[in-house]
Image 1 (cartoon, rainbow, N blue to C red):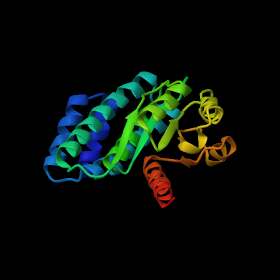
Image 2: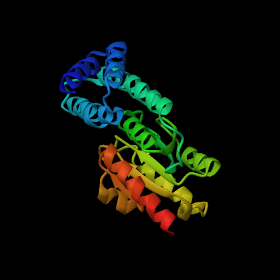
Image 3: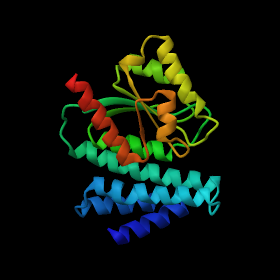
Image 4: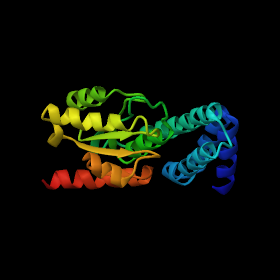
Length: 218
């Protein structure tokens, strides 16, 4: 897998979408667990890309290009998993999105993918999502968890707006609200009254698993 990792990293940085998908398909056909590809390759590669961007080693067009490659790889993995797995009971239903004022979605996309492959029904609203859109979807789809992402400090107040709107509508106790993203912290989550915080995609899955276990336990 080390050779695949290095080649995939090159593809992500160079914007080689088709080659990245072909490499991934070959890796899966060779018997590699698709979840290992996500957790051991795609997630750390995107973490590295994010760090390069923060150090100004790459710029916004490069970040967007890398995100497109990562999305193509994610879609290939997701298609394989959905085609090869038997339908099983849902682990829970999650609406996820990047809050209003923020168009970053690499991390959010990875969280959504990991949740899906771990058995969750995921409603991905994309980026720059208005507070009421989360709530409207949660009500319509009867979700368990609302997951809010932000990579900009200027957009973080919209997380507060989601929680305040839920309170105002008398719906706060119906949904668990979790938050995450670069500038978000456990302290911030606690200060705004969120139900949880995750530092990365794997942690987000564990947080949702814990929340759903508590919900089922009553």
